[in-house]
Figure 1 (spheres, one colour):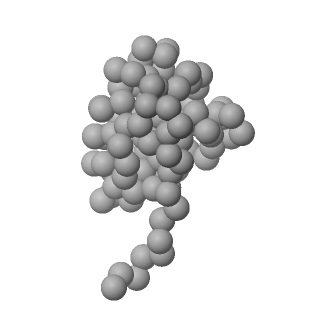
Figure 2 (figure 1 turned 60 degrees about the horizontal axis):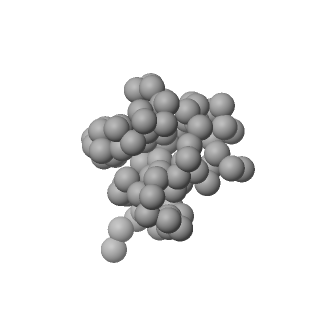
Length: 94
């Protein structure tokens, strides 16, 4: 048994196609730019690298991609690209 509280789960993507996203920094969309702990930092880098081509096609720069990935992993710990993109879309619609 762990002492860690259960993490919230990211939203499930409704559509397997990447959502239309607005290139912006998380803080510009009202999402606090959180930094993951040291153990999650590598997961953030991997997630950013996996999603980079999709997000660049939508106009995101490397700093925005890094910020979204680190915020996501700080909140959820890890996830796949589809869940990550769905989460960005949901956060941008708030």
